[in-house]
Each structure stands twice: as C-alpha cells, then as structure tokens.
Image (cartoon, rainbow, N blue to C red; front, side):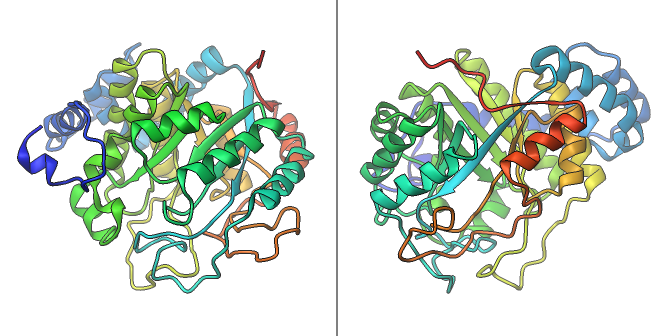
Length: 385
C-alpha cells in the first residue's frame, strides 16, 4: 500500500491488501473512450458470456435501440437462475443520527430533520410489528454515526432481529473486520454498502465532510465483511449523482471482482435512483437517469452477472417495479417506512424520514400484485437449521 493510499484513510480504519479498486479503474480506462458502434452492440448480443467490453457495449447509448433483444436475454437469465421467484424484504430504520455531510441525503449532519434513536425495547416492538406482516427478511439501517449507533447497539438490534426474521441484513456505516465479526456473531447475514458514486471527483463533491470522505475505505467494505465471515454482500450506486454509464460499469466490475476473489460469497446489486428529501442541499443539479436508460442498465447487469440478486427499492413506482421483476430484478421491498419508530407507534420520539418513497404498498398488497403478474413472491429461500 503506497503512502498516498494510506493518507486516504482515517487513522482508525483498517487498510486491507486488495487491488480491486485498481482493477475497477483499469477496466474502465480500457473502455471509457471507445465509440461503440451498432455492430459492437449486435456482436455482444450474440455472445453467451459477456466480457467487460461487451457489458460496456450494452450500457452504451448505442444499445438503447436494442432493449427488446436485451430484455429477452435478461429474462432468459433471470428464469434460468431465479425462476419466477421474487423475494420480499423490508427495511427498519433504528436511528437517523449521522456525522457525514452528504449533500443529497436527508440524514446528513447539517439537516434540520427531527433526529431519533430507538432503544432496545422500541426496536423489539418495531421488529414484532414488521414480522406480523409476514416479512422474513429484514434490513437494519442507521445513519452513519458510530457515536450514536455503536457497533454494540447494532449488534443488539441484530440479536433482536434474529428472533423474528430468518435473514438479517445491515446497511450501516462501513466498519473494520473485527466489528463485522461481532455483527456476524450477533446474527447478521448480509452487509450492504453503497459506493454512491464510483467517480472519485463526484464522490468528493457530494461527501465534503465525515468519515464517508474516505473513498478507498468505502470501496473496500464488502471485502472486510467477507473477511469477517459474512454470507453475502451488497453493492450499489445512487444513480443521479454522476455519469450513469461510468457508475453502472464500475458497479458491475466491482461486484464481479469481489465474486471472483471470494467465490463463496452471495452477491447482490442494488439500483437506487435519487429521490426528493427534506434536508438535502436544494441547490444540487442532479444527472437524472430516465426510465429507459435505467431499465437498459438493469437488463445489462442481469445479462453480465446472471447469478447476482438485483434489488429494486420503493424509490421506484409500482408500475416500474412490476416491469423490472419480470426481466431483471429478483428482490423488492414492501411495507417500507424510511422514518424512525413509525411502525409500532410505540416510540416516544419518532424521527423524520431519509427520503420520499414512491411505492407505498403493504407486504400483503405487494404479495398479491406479484401473483397477478405471474411472478412467485417468496419471503425467504433459506432454511435455518
């Protein structure tokens, strides 16, 4: 690890021996200046296994005229590896205190939102209320503040969650290997961390303060979790912050490289788009990704990474999610509330939401709607012995 790289980390952060970041950048350097032709796209569509260059061809603007062919290939891959199954899960936000200054986020430190942190009794009430909807796969979220949401606090939440759910995921601040070991031992199965933007310049602009400024530490997160023994890891970019083609390419290469290095790991891709939220910097000019381009990216990822789970959140509309699960997405959320303590109504101090959702369906509604479009809703495909 060179001196410049070491200086990109805060003193308390683990620095692991990994060249995955360099591999991502090298792969992008090879393709970023290529002018993709119609012939390039057609050639890639006729291949059984896509190279990195083929994937770039399919996310390029030139491929936008071939969505029908891409949809057919994506659908074939989806059915082959996942059938018609769509896994339902739900997030539980247990705290919204944050020490970062992400310009686009309602939880950011400078936001004037109402802050809250659930105590363990309140967490249990929230978990019970969610479990009563039928959900068996939960995702625990906090703001990124170790001061207010310590590893021990999150571990306690995982232990409570394990009483009610078969699968426990966490989406909290990036942590060191020993902290991930503690969280795994407490019952957590999956770690999800979004890189937000894979473009370093955009990343630095949108994250001006806080530990999130460390681009390298964040991009190493999935590896640290797997080194701690986690079963699976999730990746994501927040589409709208920077060039969607660069973010989509680097996101997929990141997941591919981690899967290559840790073949035992389950790999999941999340594809969120920026949403309105109170507390964000209202002067921002986002690079909005329209439905057509977003769907194209999703199809290309499904073809390129056929084994990977793809998650689509309630940031998207019901109609878009109904379309996406037929061709690419394999996991959607339901009964979603991005605020703190609203499920059980037992919290003494409810906190404001992180962002506005579009699809507000309950678990029961999402379950029935999936059946109506010919999909098979499942609550978990794991057997806990």
